[in-house]
Image (cartoon, rainbow, N blue to C red; front, side, top):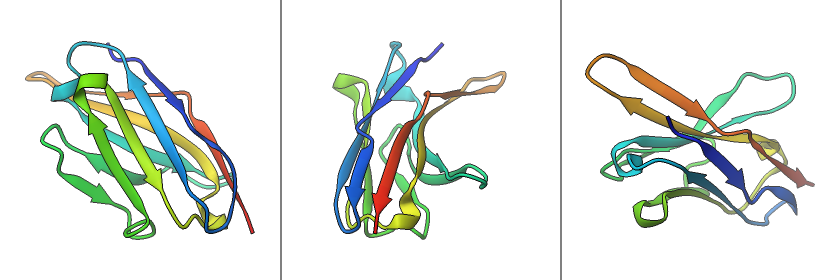
Length: 119
């Protein structure tokens, strides 16, 4: 079982920056892949960025060069640094933990943190 708690959202002007944090419970943090997803009103949830247990990263095309995902295994925390924010980045941002075992895979989600970018 993994519990995730996001923080760091807020209101920012276009061109500004925010850093989201996601603190995870459990002793298996270093073994799991982590990601950030977002959902804007009336739209489906979409992938923003992921980071594997070996710290390989993947980004949506829309955020490449502006967002950076990182993890601190000592603090059981994953971060999303968001620079040069645009109004279209406005969404509820969710942290995801993806655990793969021999039998099956598990996905855990946080409650979400709101990011609003004004033009």
